[in-house]
Image (cartoon, rainbow, N blue to C red; front, side, top):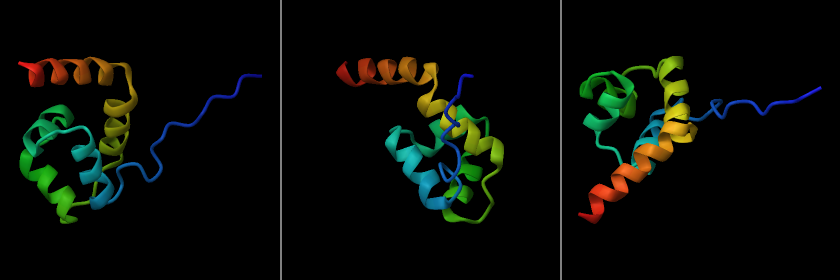
Length: 84
């Protein structure tokens, strides 16, 4: 039997503080986070202020963006842009 680790989603981006910490950790502006999550910049602002609940699909997307294979590509691209 193979056991797989659970996705790191419980408590990952489920509060305004953890959501904003995720965005800051990935060095994203609110607009960049909105683009990555297919939401408006105002929605991102509302999530961070606690004015709107953070949907489960956004929590899962945050985890995937930070830990999935695409995170390596994005990180590499951002580092190349900063070097220029």
